[in-house]
Image 1 (spheres, rainbow, N blue to C red):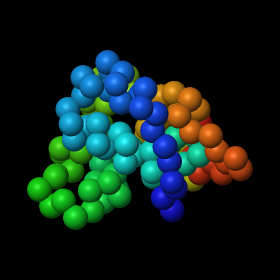
Image 2 (cartoon, rainbow, N blue to C red):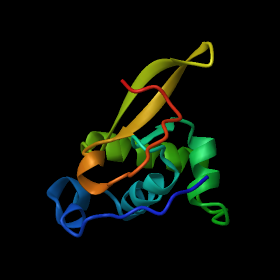
Image 3 (tube, rainbow, N blue to C red):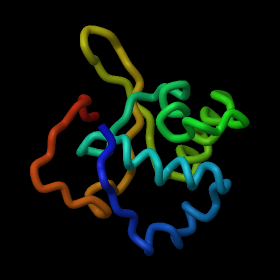
Length: 113
């Protein structure tokens, strides 16, 4: 389930954020809504597209994958692999998550790096 999240005004003026394409920046903000309380989501462009852009048919899975790469290249998120429910899955972690989010009673859905 999506959570109410905040994004710091400082974050949106950081150089690594403004270097990203506009759709990548929008995806970054949306990803925070669907991340678990540690700022982690499964790296699945298809799932992320449905969560972040459910009614935007003009945005393709490939474009979402490119947005993810843009965010990784600019240091806003990183990718890692971990065992999850008996298989090796790829995850995305939002960098500096704890600086933006104050979670009172966290619940963690995915394995941390």
